Length: 292
Image 1 (spheres, rainbow, N blue to C red):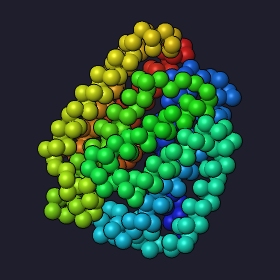
Image 2: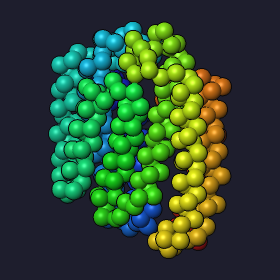
Image 3: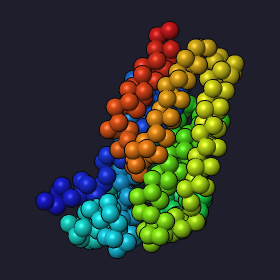
Image 4: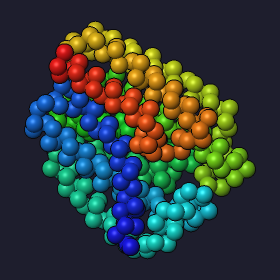
């Protein structure tokens, strides 16, 4: 059915990535403030719409190449389940809905949302052809999400959160490239994604190693910073560090030994150890920030 194909076109399983929009709500101490909760979740909904808009634009551009890809060929446009005209109409509708929600949340949020869309269109048509820059642009997209979420509820988005969001997105991005290279093989990878010709398993392992260390060090420095402890009202957030470290190590294990990681979203939604690690991290963070 076309309705089912349209839903798949929106990629709702990838909406979990927009969870970073709620970072400002949690670390801004506003998770128990009802008006802020409403605005934060409206911001989350807006970015779900805008991310789907970007996915449709990407699928329209790449549908011919996707037909030769072992997994992307099942996407609705590549598989011919819906026409480009229907995809364009869907993009227009959700784009207008996202724009309306953005304007309701204020000019600053609307500007951040516009930056997100422009950045991702730039990625689809230009930046995805540039080695290393391709992953960095994706990481900036996550930072813009988190920044917009903070703007929606008028809380500060400090440098520590900026850096951690950026580094974690880099980690996941390079892990995804590593999986793609292993899945497609060096000889075929470049025909599906141009930049994969310039990557190698050794280079990606080096990049992942550097970013892994940076994520761990930045997180522990952030949660033990006196300024952050004063701002958040607790000096016990360091307790959450083992959950972060385990999640990183588990993801690396899946990339290198289970041939997973091509979709960080699927890993987050299906791998029980990572789900448990994230759940425990959230529980402890909420307890420390709101109950301790």
